Image (cartoon, rainbow, N blue to C red; front, top):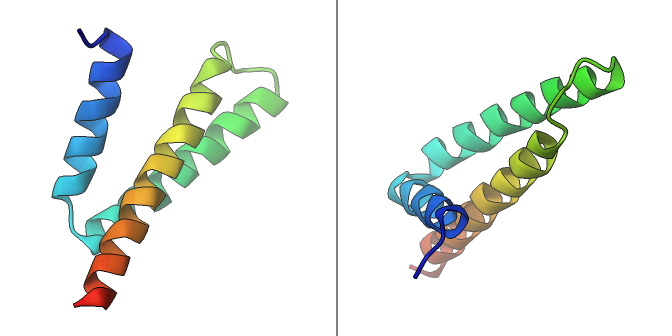
Length: 77
């Protein structure tokens, strides 16, 4: 059985895999902007949920991984 956390990761990865390269690049850029905002909130001690930093960092890594896979597949063709 998949837990809620695992189901969320699978659905996030599945939705990212549906996007094209340009969409993934835009997603990475948006996630990086969100992560920057969270870091600034943490620095000014306005961030209540510091776990969101880890979540966004992992989402960025997930998106970059899928982007690299798609670019490698396109280069192999």
